[in-house]
View 1 (cartoon, rainbow, N blue to C red):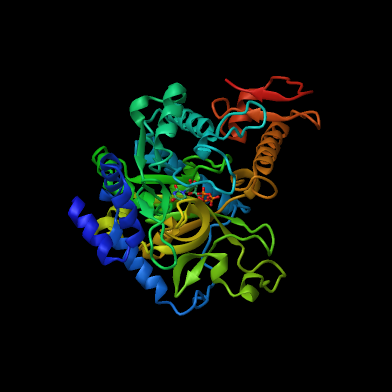
View 2: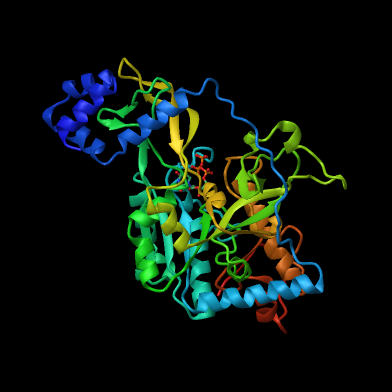
Length: 461
Ligand code: UTP
């Protein structure tokens, strides 16, 4: 939009405080002020504001949700054989350079309260590696194992992109080939007050929020990376969040099931920890696979037990997906298909007197899992929480750095025990993905070797 168009737009949308502020700025300030506006989708946020303000109250009808078909953790010989078949298929797709990896790292990480991109957080129990380093080393290990080129895509936002790129550059891309690592930015949207006013963050900066993890599917398309990968023969994307150090990057079994089921999107779920754990649930709504947020359940449904006394809706979302590139293309074909949600948050912005104050803001975001009901076919696989899911969300308590470090330590201890090694009870252990990506590889590498672990130990290359 041109300067005149922006000013007219603001006038027509009752943004007097913003215009008054504009008129008080120096010519340079005015310029900077308007520059920020040019790339924003202002009409979208006003349409969304209109939609959400017309809701009489904030409550929505609750969903009727039914259990969906799930590929559970294999127990019988038949299930194990199927899982092996899936693994072989998945491995062949990685070998044929059909699988790329996307880590979404554009969130604000406000609960953790860490300064800087969350991927820089030092998480591993002994070597204190960052989340980004762990993921990069897993990708490196996979590409060596399968002799393939596995592109690593990292979605950032406008505010953390520079620091993220610099972090990779200053660590020499953790020995990945630089040309196989791609960064792209998700869109930012203005946060509004409940009355529909923009909020100033600083003299000439608006308060903006990243457009949700669902924005990855739009930004991936708009950045041209989707086309680039498709043109180079890639067909599947392994999607995960930056905050889960246990994630099995590009798990071949998962990739294999995704392909065997001809799914457009697949999801890994874990059993809910307990009735109170707040997590999205994978199930059927109107006959379609869907992830329903816990807040969209009737409380009595969320806490319901089945006839065996187990949690009825046990399928907790891990936000680990396989997504077909053709599906992402389709989601963007006629404008972006995902719906925008509103989050009401207490934020800091400039009040009418120009000082920082607590302000209620409406953030508009899309969620990646909203694409599941739009898929022609989707697939869901249960995995073990202890082996694959321990997100770093909070500073303390559940889902915190402490629980994630303990989970990594416990997992690696269990691998060592299977390899016949008993670490001292108080010893912390860490196995580099470059040494072994799984229990089987560790057992193989340690065959015939004796190892005494009496204190903290890092097992690297
Ligand atoms: P969360 O929903 O946990 O949000 O994101 P967050 O921003 O990291 O943390 P809080 O809620 O402010 O404490 C889950 C994943 O989705 C990514 C995050 O980086 C994380 O990997 N994400 C979230 C984005 O990439 N963009 C967004 O707009 C939101």
